[in-house]
Length: 226
Image: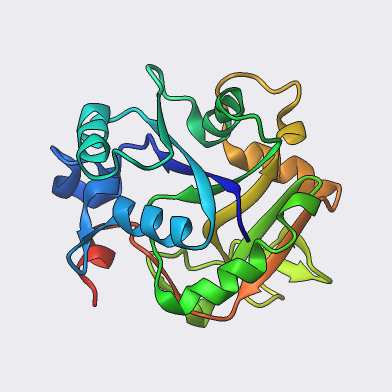
């Protein structure tokens, strides 16, 4: 997959990291001696991403300074949210900074590896055909790091629905493809969960379960794990 836009969510406070994020924004923390944000940028540019949009809020100047120093020649634009817009509002706002009607959105706390590469390329293969939303999901056995006791979603005939205890646990991997049209008539500040709930009721979210392992660096414990 070539020539796609990636939004990296970097506006959050990283409160589950406790003392680790008192003076360092979560995207700049290291796992296995590599900065999380660098891991994401390197992984997606390597598979064809040619436009990166990053929203910031908490300790935004440190993220800007890091990007200016390390990624000056990359096609990256930083969008500072003076007032945090929430996961949904942040994504909606990003469409004001790109001409593309469909973008990939990724959390900054997923640690990507070479083993994920072919699977993510497959996930992105029909990027331009997504009418509403497509989620990358992970099985319980393959989802490492921070996760809930209950699953997030279930998948039947490639259509995503909410998880219940009769189904296999599937977790949201932190990566999705979204179309601009799903944000029509939405307020400025809102959660992506509100969009998902509406789309699930209409069977409008597609899904793909990644066969390789995914690591969610979601809290202090998970960043210390090997």
